[in-house]
Image (cartoon, rainbow, N blue to C red):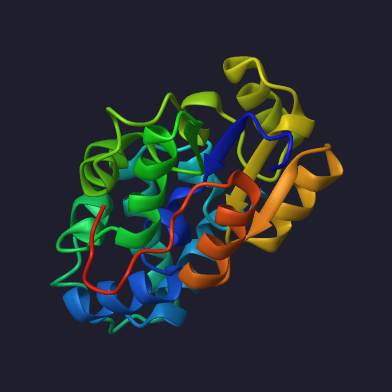
Amino acid sequence: MSDLKFVWFDFGGVLSPPIPALFEQYQAKTGLAPRVLQQAMRDVADDLGVPMLAPVESALLTEQEWGQRLEQALRRRYPQIDLSRARLQTFGEQWFAGVPANAPLVAAVRALKRAGWRVGILTNNVVEWAPYWRAMVGLDEVVELIVDSSQERTRKPQAAFFQVAIERSGVAAKHSLLIDDVLENIEAAAALGWQVLHFTDNHQAITQLQRLTGVSLLQPVGESA
């Protein structure tokens, strides 16, 4: 058993399906290839001098403003592009439509809570997307805290964002665990004294989390929490 007191879960890529899978699902809905959409996202961010998703994750732009700029960026690079199926100004609603949560990790959150652990979500996210992703994971009544970059105007991997989590939870970095799929975020948290678990797949993460907490999280096939 470690000296952990609070377990923080990332949303995108941990409690949700992997990010590449989300882009592929969005392509199926809209026809926009991941590389094309990601380049447009980078173009919008470059105009502001920030990382790819920071314009909306730090609430520098509203979802509508961001969607308008995405459309402009796409049309600049691809004048003949077909955007008839894409609803860029209400991006989140379309992005999350039909997307399931990562059930084994959601079950792990619930199991930890039942075992008496303090659990929260530490996410780079978007103001207008909250109704969709929070309904998707269904953990509002389970987690103690949700710290969302778009509400704080700072985001992982910035130290200020991790400090918000420490202040809200009242738990020191050395007693806090971040589970995240983005190595940059893991390295930033570790540098600040956090315990970290770099998520690569469900079995790896759940096995490590079980070892760290002493809570039985590996379930027989076909059994749900």
